[in-house]
Amino acid sequence: MGDRLGTGLVLVSAVGFGTLGIFGKLAAAAGLSIPTILSFRFLLATVLVWGWLGARGELSPLSGRSLVVGLGLGSLGYATVSALYFVGLEFMTAGLTGIVLFTYPVIVVVLAAAFLDEPITRRTVFALVLAVAGVVLITGGDPAGVDVRGVLVVLLGAFIYATYIVVSRRQLVTVDSRTLTAHVLPAAAFSFVVVGSATGQLSVPTTPWSWGVVLAIAVLGTAVPIFTFFAGLSRIGASRASIVSTVEPAATLVLGALVLDEPVTVVTVLGGALVLSGVVLVEG
Image (cartoon, rainbow, N blue to C red):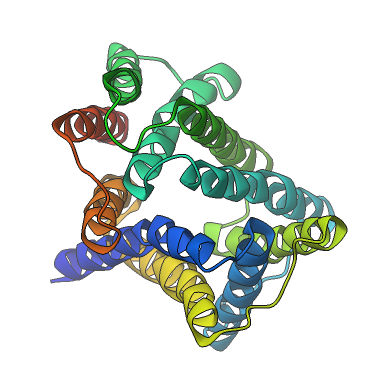
């Protein structure tokens, strides 16, 4: 029963994160700028996550070097990844953006081998080949919704996210993921408030619809997936949770078709399957 519940919680998390691209498209259509969307996303999520951890007695503020590294990962690493993801949404469908970003677990394995002395096996190489082949197939096949500029932007985001994960593993070996998340969120929020204010792109949503989309991004696309992932992780472990999480880009693809009427082609499905196969291979 615990395994089923844990798997279910991680599935809920994957679908929740999978809604981010859908709500991002809706937010852009409502006229909200990227700094506005992401400022409110991270500010509201910070309140929810800190409140949740505080209520459970699990709030552990960082200090010293760990605090500096944690805030740096949030303000520079995670903030940049989020910005690139939303820029990618301007060029591609939500489904394809999610698939391309999800190459990051394979990149993590390669970077870990290079900088953390983790071994590269034939399995790792094969997984990398599958993931790259999936992206090449999607791009070269030129299905509806693909823009090479978007692919490159999101691939850069995947690389930065992989770097973020490797750096956090190396620099914050004694910090658990809940504590790191609690510091990454406000740091990312601060970055977008500063950038948005400096560029004149930061504004407050003015309609019930735009507020609803922003709240959906912060709650359904950020806070709830964080809560359910950690709850599921404690039941089924990191490896199984990582594999179950590969549902995320598939969820985005399906939701994009259902909610946004985005096209789904055979090439898209085959390319996505190759990417997910590579991810499952390195995490299995």
